[in-house]
Length: 213
Image 1 (spheres, rainbow, N blue to C red):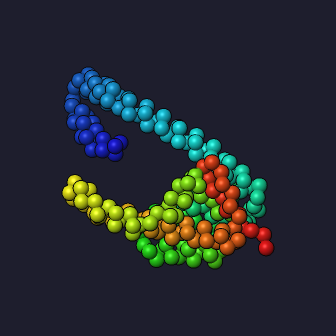
Image 2: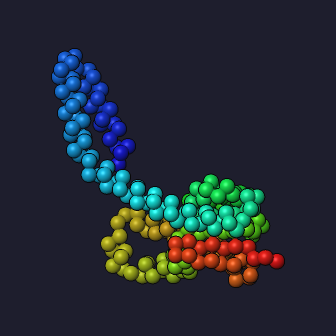
Image 3: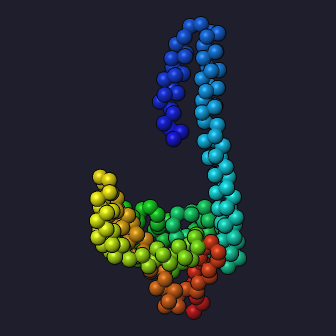
């Protein structure tokens, strides 16, 4: 919401600066600052708390994953992070030598990108593939039957009757996103089943390591 304040605040400041009387101008600045401070105090404190909480959780999780990668790979090894947690590349000093270091949200925009990502993974065979999230969420995304879900929702007349304008368009978009994600994750799972990768399941991450030939 912060960008929404830019226009009204700019207009208020502009009007205050146009006042000739210095004391009145200073009083208005103080009053405006006080009102803004009171109005924004709770939202800002809450937001800062959430940011700190998420940062600490991500930092701890990424540290665990990063340490595993550093201990089990060389600097020149090829690694891939599924999703968009690209800070792991910086934390480990490793990189992905394929075209797509991250896949979200770009692969939900164009089906051809999804196909390229799958081909990229098969061709490059990263030494380590990382998924940030619990294994259950990985399986849910893999096994979501998009067409069945769509059919189920369409058959629910009460859902359609209560649906707001644009709801079906949103549903179509959501289904396409799930399909794209499922295609990529199914590829990684298939390579694991074929013995190309060994899987290591942690509480909040999944790591595939290239099997030794």
